[in-house]
Length: 437
Picture 1 (cartoon, rainbow, N blue to C red):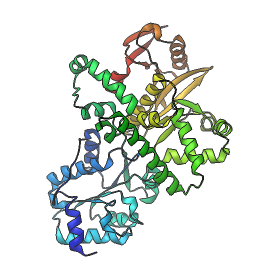
Picture 2 (picture 1 turned 45 degrees about the horizontal axis):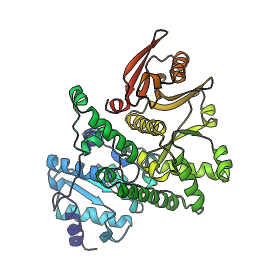
Picture 3 (picture 1 turned 45 degrees about the vertical axis):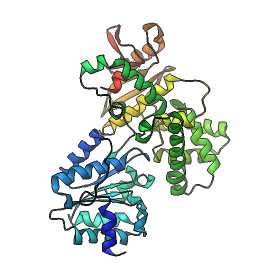
């Protein structure tokens, strides 16, 4: 391809050309990425479930850095652009050479390589540029191959991974034009916040879905996302031939969110070999469509043998895909809490999330920070004290003694209070308020 043609295509994607729509700002991620760019000289790798908003986020990074460094010093390339033709690493080299020759950056440029998994052996190019200290680089992709575990191998530890999730509830409200600042806003807008929370539970936080007004179209979009994830991020990547079994298992998980599962029990229920269940479950988790939380135990061996709880990365997706005959707000609330805990823990390498089974009682979430248990959490669809299950409180108190943790929380639907039992304080916090903390 002639260099003039390459520049013509690139001009449609870059701020030194026509510029791009940058969408609704994802402030949390934007600030985080910009802070990494000011820090250590490492490749920043952006990964996460397909359609979570990574490309728009990268456009926002390009906009900010174009203003700071100068437009000519930022190159954004989206490799889903069909006009590039070739998907060989030589195409990547040609693009970079054309940019250097025609745009002439006068500082160390920032290269943003979006959907880079479309280019074979892209990591060779990135490693070479990085080792020569020739450019700052951000890579991003929806493919399972660009998830953090694989990136660590591809870039030999030269990267800082950033996982992008569907919208948090705070982001959801921002997309809806609901400004929530301090305590005053929360009090004044409480009923508006709760109304939005019901929609957030039902349809989730994928940006396109949040911005779509029609409920049937929302469901259709979510079903299409799920199908695309299965085909592109599981079947093609892992060369799965047993399509029906994969779909059967994925639907089973989406139907049974917030539930403990074992490979053996699923194998019997679905009549699928245990090894196939284990293998397909790993593939689905790698795609980030769903994730598992281990049971807390002093030994890793016991954790691996115990049942794990399964959650969808987005409740809208599980509601659109899973089989339902009635609403189970308790399970959906628990899933939303699990995703939020995962989102918060993704910024700290020492935080881990578990559930706990103790003397036949269950605690929904154990938050472990380093070697200490930081917090114990139950989730209850309760709006009054009479709806709080005493067994849930007793489970927290028992776990508090065993794990020496005094930060005890029950996340409710709309009940806020404090219970003191045997000198221990249990805080009751509404879900909407906890999500905005």
